[in-house]
Amino acid sequence: MHRLSVLLVLVLTWYACGPRKVIQIAMEDQKEFKYLALGDSYTIGESVDPAKTFPELLANELRSQGVNVKRPQIVATTGWTTMDLYEGILAAPAGEFEYDMVSLLIGVNDQYQGKPFDTYEENFGKLLETAIRLAGGEKDRVFIVSIPDYAYTPFGQKKDVSRITREINAYNETNRRIAGENQVLYFDITEISRKGLSDPSLVATDELHPSGKMYQEWVDLMAETICDRFKR
Image 1: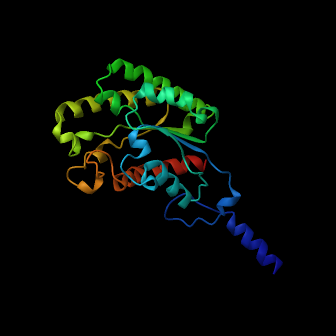
Image 2: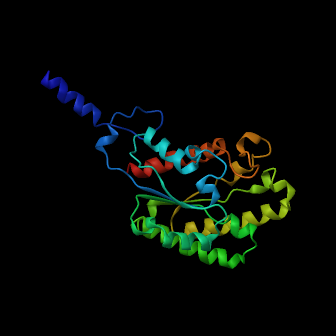
Image 3: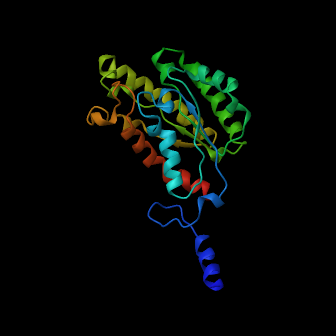
């Protein structure tokens, strides 16, 4: 009986990250990973159930793959620009701690409010530096999410569609370049957002923000890569 118990313990110490492999390690034996999500309405999940936001869905997916992630800490508010977010981080208790993972998604309100483009570039660079600091200086624990294209929503269709898409592309070219210069992981979810007109179920009831279904598609794109980083 003693030998059988030892064998079971040895078996339970093996685990894998892939979604098709069996996870056999008790999560309570792992370190608890702290996740900080920085952003605006796309991060806080305007018009969706809080459990269906992309940070919550991502944390749930990582847990299902054997990564013991605490409930995400979120610093985000609907309508925030890059400067608003920077000031919000300074004012939030979250700015006093160190996190195992930090996500950054910001910029749509800079575009929507017509802020100077060079201000976005400067502020985004400062925000990424802050995100890296909050991740303990570990760049591989930070990831950037591209800005969705709200031209492909019923709300966006009432605006200048070509201008929205053109400007969102420019903002994303900038944040992607800054991510590359800093060797930070980058997820392009913009093309997913552009399915909002062909599949209305991807858009929330406010006819502007992503639905939980779209957020899940974002997470499907991110989860394997992020999980792999935790397993290093």
